[in-house]
Length: 192
Image 1 (tube, rainbow, N blue to C red):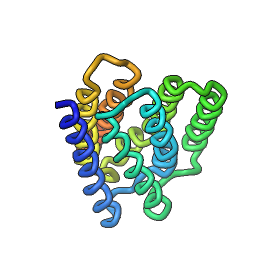
Image 2 (image 1 turned 180 degrees about the horizontal axis):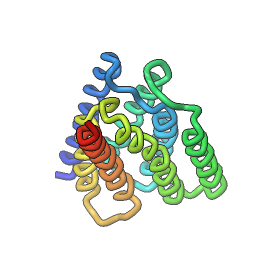
Image 3 (image 1 turned 90 degrees about the vertical axis):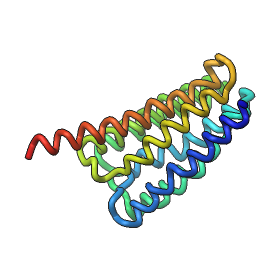
């Protein structure tokens, strides 16, 4: 059963990227470069930290996400927005500081939690962008990714806070982007 939940999380995660990539090529979605760069680095760290701490069935989510975010970051170089604004630079510096802290601690659980915090810093850039310009994101991607996180959390199979941390975070950050988009659309509608 846990393996099936993990596989569902992985399959859902694959499908989260398809509408996003389609919308990038349609020039509708514009990924925030600093966010996707931070997520590329940190997804890899989270993947290896989860492996080091014994994750198994829930690895499908983070494995697929690592490949997906690296691909989106590559696309963001040409089709994205941001990267050198003051807010982007602050987020990148904070992410770099967190990576240094992890490097010196050499503890997988600490690396995972630091990665989640840094990931959230990058994620907040996209939350802000999604609220300001909701049409620049793909709602289905964020909803599917959050739902994949739910399946991955159940795939952990026990109350292990280290193994649950990343899937639960995935749920929260993805649904935060979705909520920001909905609130941003409402704001734009009420302004007109």
